[in-house]
Image 1 (cartoon, rainbow, N blue to C red):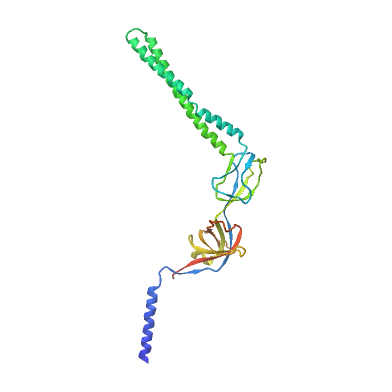
Image 2: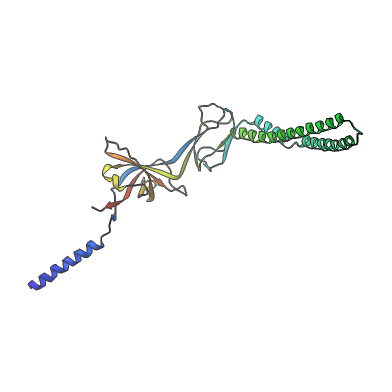
Length: 283
């Protein structure tokens, strides 16, 4: 009987050693935090305005409409800018002056050659030869000036196009229209935005976590988000920001997560519950 007991004790020792050898180093199995209160918010909210002031001519969207990045949502009155652009384009395509100058220069260069040949045979005075050369040189400089003026006209087209763009309202994000502050006919001053846009893919989750979990939640940590029961479901989110400054009064620190929302099923402005996947550090 004693021999059997000794065998059982030895077997337990062996199993214990095996368990120690098989234990992972650094991180143990994942554990979960308790459920915490959180809020689902838009990734960003944009107060859209133009860089110039003026009367709103048109708005192509209204509250609740979805917009895409780069989409023109409306514009200020731009009749003068449109006319200036048309004028600049007309000047930029007018190369008749250059053609005329080139023809005159070709003629004068030929004249220089002919006068020089006559001067070499004493059939033309030296003054005539020099005069022909000076005229050709002046025509060459005039041709350069005409080419420069045409290049300036082309640059003026770009400048006028940029002035026209400043009077348009272009969406900087993919999102939805939250609010429209002005309507066509109203004057936009320097302090008045025109539209409020919200980016809802991805969404942003904000949560305050007890200090006990500070070393267990890092950028890249995953979490499960449960929106308010009216919406329901469980969604995966990833930590993007862990605050380095704590709130001493509540004993918490802030964490921000990215919550993908490609099909826009989740609205922003929801209360939620969140559970983090925590990594236990080995002691």
